[in-house]
Length: 195
Image (cartoon, rainbow, N blue to C red; front, side, top):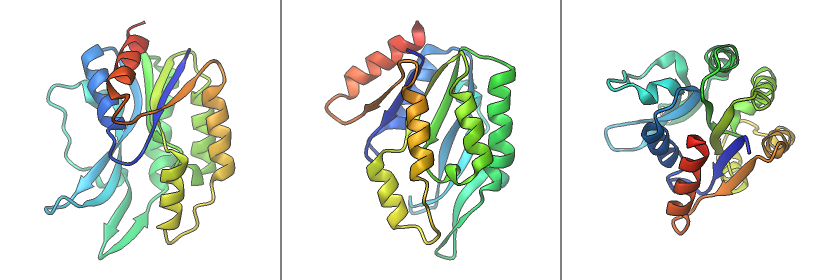
């Protein structure tokens, strides 16, 4: 098996689990993860694309980087910036291919980034790299929820199907994480990364 992805409901702890296991294993990593931006009241006000390798840094500089924010809320309105994927996102995927590490993190995919055909193509190419790949794939329920609550069109069903098919090829898997199987999936993920 080469691809190990999680899906599940919002806030079930998919990214938290991935990051915890990645830090514990301590192997070289490339790719990206998505960091939530919060306001003083604890409300999510944006999403930022971050380099996966910073997860292993002891003193990671987690100051917000505005140029890497692909969704943000301003004056109650959500604003998309797909250019983040076509510049910074492409650079992170290119680095993962040209400077191979023990594994690649793609956390999270299957959402608005697929509106960029250029980035989608790069994701598909990355999924065919020889390294192990771990990540989060946005579940159908979360996609439908996002689609329902977004002002702009979010018709990416074809791209999602193509991405899912590519993940599952080469004995990849997408496991549904929930509160009942958290410990078992954590163990499987840890074993997968240590192999």
